[in-house]
Image (tube, rainbow, N blue to C red; front, side, top):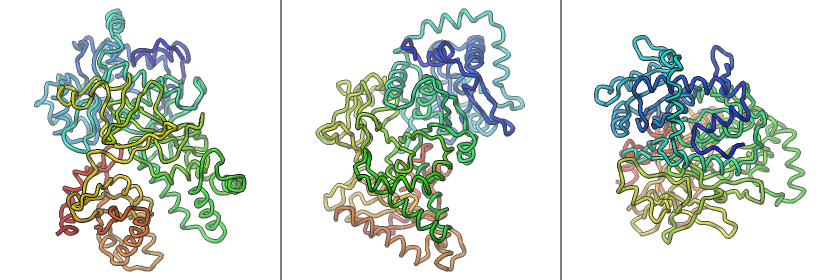
Amino acid sequence: MSENITRLFDFAYNQLANNPLDRCFNSKINSEWVPTSTKKYIEQANTISRALLRLGVKPNDKIAVVTATNRPEWSILDVAALQIGAINVPLYPTISSSDYEYIINHSDAVLCFVSDKNLYKKVGEIQSKTQLKDIYSFETIKGVSSWESLLELGKDTSNQNDVDLFKNQVKENDLATIIYTSGTTGTPKGVMLSHKNIVDNTKVSANALDLEANMTYKVISYLPVCHIYERFALYYYQYIGYEIYFAESIDKLGDNLREVKPHFIPVVPRLLEKIYDKIIDKASTLSGIKKILFYWAVELGKKYKPYKKNGWWYHFKLSIANIIVFPKWREALGGNIKFLVSGSAPLQPVLIRIFTAAKIPIFEGYGMTETSPGISINDFRNKGFKIGTVGRALESIQIKIADDGEILVKGTSVMKGYYKNPELTKETIINEYLHTGDIGNIDNKGFLTITDRKKEMFKTSGGKYIAPAHLEGKLKESRFIEQAIVIGEGEKMPAAIIQPHYEFIVEWVKRKQIETDGSNEAISSNKKVRKRIHKEIKKMNKSFGKWEEIKAFELTPDIWSIENGLLTPTMKIKRKEIKKKYHHLYKKIYP
């Protein structure tokens, strides 16, 4: 791996020079995985750069891009724009037209690229209210400027010297991208990241992940590339030299995993929870000795401790479980997974124990858009794996805890600031330390534990502090509870609004011969279902402090999703939106 990488597009050129791949990117087209080589990747990037210059794009111009699924064109455009000094502004495909209008105007974007007809329609609705000169589509749409037309425009190589000139003028501290936060609360903020911010973070993260460079490893890219977590991952894959396979969709991820058999994928907690729930649901159909062995293995996994701390007898039993039960778990993920890295939100420690016991290690990390993104991570090497923590600080990252418990971070990957918002930048970065808004602590071995979001903690009327994320994570350990939000600020006791795990409960209702019409509305209002969930909550309350115990709850008939605006694109709960939508349930709990 070359150390001459200082700008984001250098990752692609480094791969071309040192480890060119025939299958750099791979997309599923007509049931076949169609490859794009490193050579073609760079050639097309230069072709698009030449076309952009002919369209009048200048250094520091902003180019918005939004795609429904990850695809080669995104990375090709990224290199093409960045190497002529333009700024990449990625957008989420799930936001509304009014959000597009706000972000495109706020970012001063002059062009927008979309992946398909649906996204063109959303952005096209507001084009006249923005300064956009044109909208280009990766897929061919009648009457719409196309990706193919740009490839045609850039065929003439006579201005390649201009591309090379601009490329040589790009410096590592130049602005590379403005990433608008997904907005769990309030108006999205434009995080300004330089080439150096992300390049430095990619390099130190590569050192922290125990995968050998230049091996023929395969990875699947499926998280939204507009999110810094997946975007950083794409640079990392190019840096290390992995074959990148773009998942067809989140719904087809399971099929793609079994086809590609990847060695590594980044994950978010909600995905792992869904995988685990499906495994457990499937096991409920087993009978006899198979069912007994399955649950014996799961209970064994729940007790897992790293570095053989459980003793030889435990690990002897675990070796049996890894022969007769857990192989099917590994097969479901393709059979080649070396480890998973979990980020974006807190992960239930019990899931880390079970999957790691099943030889699918999960390394939980911590990061933010504002830190490009990595701050800390777990790793098996040098006793660097501690369940319940987000690991130790990455090389070159300094972490300290403020007097009020807030996590402060310093390092070369800390953002340049918030676009057009110097006041907020000054409030967030003080004496070179980024104030993360997260509450946590560091133990004497350097392991960081996050206890909650500073803004999400609240006091009851009795003056007791409640950290909702911790309580919500515990509630979700129940198979009956898929999502939960803990409420009660200024009230006499905490309570919860819960989205039941309907997929599981439907089967449970059948087994228990409980009469319902099968609808979510009927299930959520059924007295026996409510009684069972109350039993689960009482069980969880035993692990809470007296002041934290959930004293009341209400069930929602809706599935919380990205589509209905109750989850962010990385599947974190949107507290503000949930509280607003279920205000009537709040009033029912606190009349």
